[in-house]
Image 1 (tube, one colour):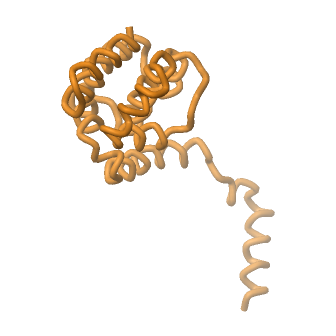
Image 2 (image 1 turned 60 degrees about the vertical axis):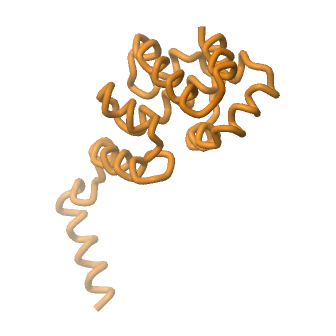
Length: 150
């Protein structure tokens, strides 16, 4: 029985060489919404910051997470290590956001472009980041993050 199935499949491939062709582009496009749905249902995707950015700016959960992580990564570059550690200690969800996305040494605009976001979205994400930090830390920490993102 197994041999007859293999023989049948082989004969089909001789008749139509494209019978077993796989369209990777279609597979990736159809997988994108699933990826966003999976991300939205994780602890990172259910983060209030991600939900707020997604609903307010009309971006996907993947874009919201990636853009937020990129901005926090940018802030980390300009903050003292102890200050950034204090930020992530007081708001562990920031560390989760950042660990959900591979670290990048690319410029911020390139990171946003890789997510399919235009450079002007950086300025639209920033107030959400600052409001989120304000909601979970001290005014002094909010000022440090704001200064780092200027």
